[in-house]
Length: 73
Image (cartoon, rainbow, N blue to C red; front, side, top):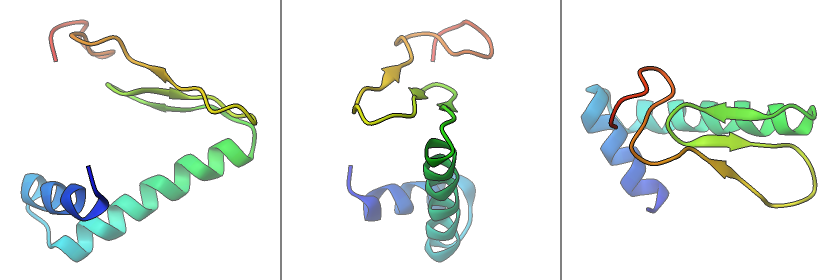
């Protein structure tokens, strides 16, 4: 998915303007990058974990279950 499509989808789902959705997305990405630069893992519920380090490996969440309720997504 391209960033512009993600921003439109976020704006529609949250009821904010595309500009506000873009700002929110930028903030989230900056927090993830910041955690990784500090050597901390970045966990995103429903998606998985991004571990710090030089390797490009991501631990994605198992499909069909969420971390919060252990039920179907």
